Length: 154
Ligand SMILES: Cc1cc2nc3c(=O)[nH]c(=O)nc-3n(C[C@H](O)[C@H](O)[C@H](O)COP(=O)(O)O)c2cc1C
Image (cartoon, rainbow, N blue to C red; front, side):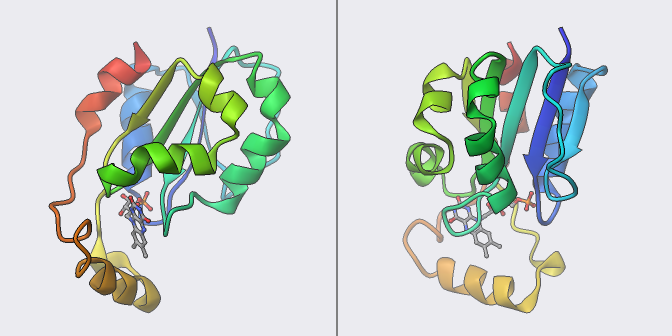
């Protein structure tokens, strides 16, 4: 079964997760949708789709891709994921970022947590992180969850 992993990342944590998935599915193709959205799904039986959350949203290219290709994706084995630092928002963010039909169809849905790499961030993001850290959710520890890959891919 040929697998395609489609994702978006800004500071590289989602890339780390995708690289870990690729180790477990060596013949998978990986495509960063921020580099191209010109993707032919025909050759794939299985699609993994996900990305990092910024202020409640994944990258626009991922949202648009899921909407535009919904009918094709409904014919594939589908897994959805987010890299979402604030676990409490995960279920809501899945619903707001992916079409309901895809959420119903997906065989696995997972949150791989988040990583705040402040040293890599632009000024605006640094300021936002400072503000977020003062909220009740933002003051909780931010955890990575690569160990969830195993069950996600099962
Ligand atoms: C400006 C900013 C806004 C963020 N907003 C959210 C958010 O609304 N919800 C959330 O769960 N995580 C949020 N995060 C955390 C990121 O999703 C997390 O750091 C993730 O690991 C980033 O992945 P990336 O390195 O692949 O870009 C935010 C991070 C930044 C820098």
